[in-house]
Length: 175
Image 1 (cartoon, rainbow, N blue to C red):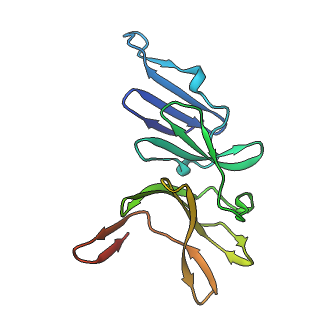
Image 2 (image 1 turned 180 degrees about the horizontal axis):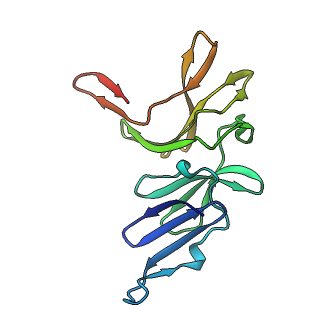
Image 3 (image 1 turned 135 degrees about the vertical axis):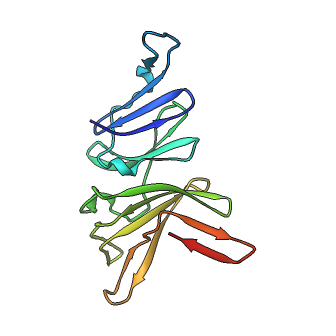
């Protein structure tokens, strides 16, 4: 079953649970789309909403070799497997079904942000009932974005999926 569809000017990326298929405009009026077998990938995504595109690349979480990995597809080239942050046992996240991802830009930097509302994961002896990771695309670095939950004594996920900074006002708007 198709989990997500991303289209570019000339290609359609159909990401399923176990594979990814790339189609392109064929120029044939009877069959306008043809499949590019060489661009297909033998892995898809178990989390449909983990897919996000910055216009240049497509990012999504996949299961490769039995382990969760982040995949970066760039213009039909071979997929790049990005490891998650050091010392973060991403395979220990209890529930990935509600994960959400988006691309966020701030001060000239772009981030692939993925949030797990029901993570239930321990990192450096600190339990996170929910967690958000941000991958700085230019710097190739991971960050954990969180909000301190004082009553629970733990960090919760950064819950927003929109963020705006208006420099002249010195104000941040998060939604």
